[in-house]
Image (cartoon, rainbow, N blue to C red; front, side, top):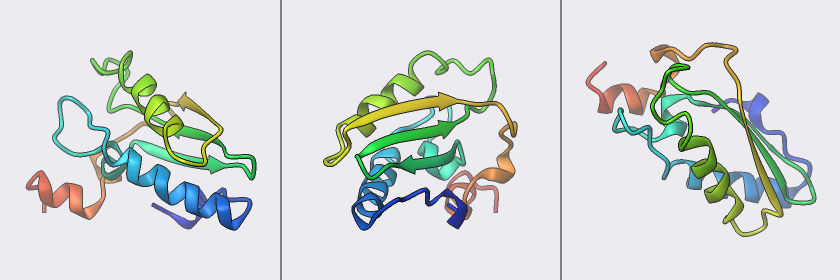
Length: 113
């Protein structure tokens, strides 16, 4: 994602953040065959020096069928990353997600390029 998403407080936090991103790439929106990180659903990853991780994410729409299952899945997977002491997922709706937020890889995979 972007440099502004770094949120890291120490070199250990940078390493944890990279592992969190790898874990997020194993989570999929059930209606779109692309992981949530490449879809652009992850807005911010904040890793504290203590290993506490806060994820700000959105869903493709407020009516997304995964609204009840996806955030807890993300939280559980992030919590399982070595070095993470706690994980919290905050679902936000601003900005509203749109297909332009997808990575080039996601667009290519979905035939949008």
